Length: 154
Image 1 (cartoon, rainbow, N blue to C red):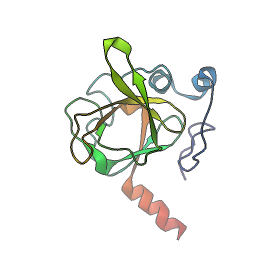
Image 2 (cartoon, rainbow, N blue to C red):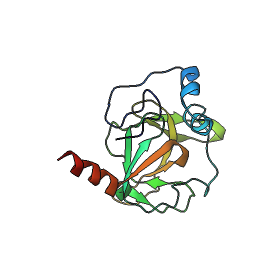
Image 3 (cartoon, rainbow, N blue to C red):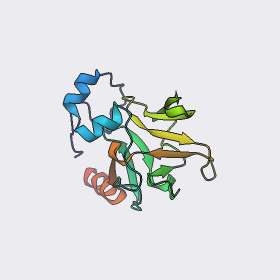
């Protein structure tokens, strides 16, 4: 059974989540809220997943939306978890970000529009993209745990 972190958290519901910042503030831990709603960034090389090598799936920590699989994670040297593609075309959305005197593309959760990080065009094949994502906004489930749950349902 998936851990229910808040009333909108679901790893299977694809319905859009539209809450006010005040509602999010009441639902999310402070560190998750700061990244997800305030567009914060954790320090490089400090997040729990920047150097993770386990096989499995990464989800949005705010709403549970599936975002990335570990097979698309790679070591970029930037200090944040890096992926070359999301799970699906609808799992993330893209927004221009011209803050801090830079022109970047922000990556948001496709279900709840939480800030995840940014995407850059210096990644490996086959996409050439590097999704640079904050660990704080990610939940992870190891592949073995997913397989075990699947087998229990048979």
